[in-house]
Image (tube, rainbow, N blue to C red; front, top):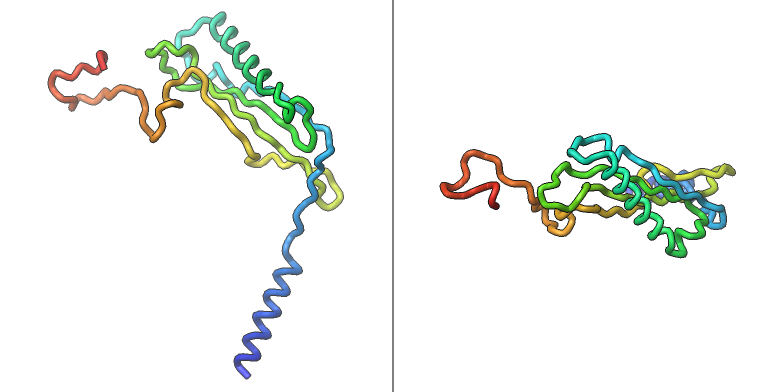
Length: 162
């Protein structure tokens, strides 16, 4: 009797969960999408000593990189999602001569039909990003190129020369 009651409770629980589970919203794959570039403070967070002309020229190059990515057929005629390109500032470290450090992130916000309404999914959308003018993006493994400024360096070790 206990086994039958236990099995009945499990069956009722499983069937209840199945009926309460949310259905996956239907993707609107044919909805025309948009593309926009968002300047997410690419030059507002750091004062790295670059002139206004240098930051303007760099911004134009970042937009040109974004335009080059848009030549891909998926981003050329956008359907079913909106795309935004976010431009971020990078580390303020121009010791290595790589120009103004920045990051470009592409976010893809899909459209779906949820309870009869068109909804754009914007919370943590799928994205990809890359760094511009930053040697740290090539090193990996958590290693960075910032020098050790601690006073416990080995005798004879020249931090600036390193």
